Length: 113
Image 1 (tube, helix red, strand yellow):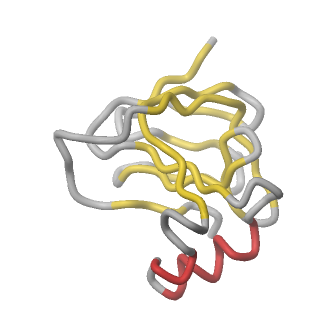
Image 2 (image 1 turned 180 degrees about the vertical axis):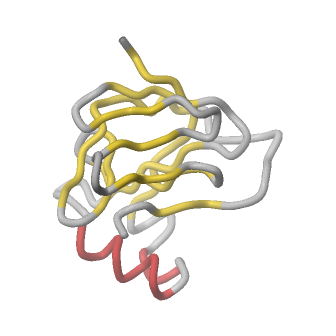
């Protein structure tokens, strides 16, 4: 499906603030214009088109989310460095920025009202 997950936990993470509307572009869940990799425990309900965050908060398409993380581009982490299934999906949904948003493991993601 459109949900890409990272697994494990981390006390450290990237220092960027990821924020933007939840989207579904080219078969990938995105934040703003970037395909996103979500932390383990995130779930996607395709029928309702709702993302459930690890803390149980639901986010519908178009609603704003914010959380810690960072952006990888083709120079910093090429798509080919991901497992094959993930790399193939990312390759199909990379936008003009060629960047992937990755939320930090173990840090909260919030829905902005």
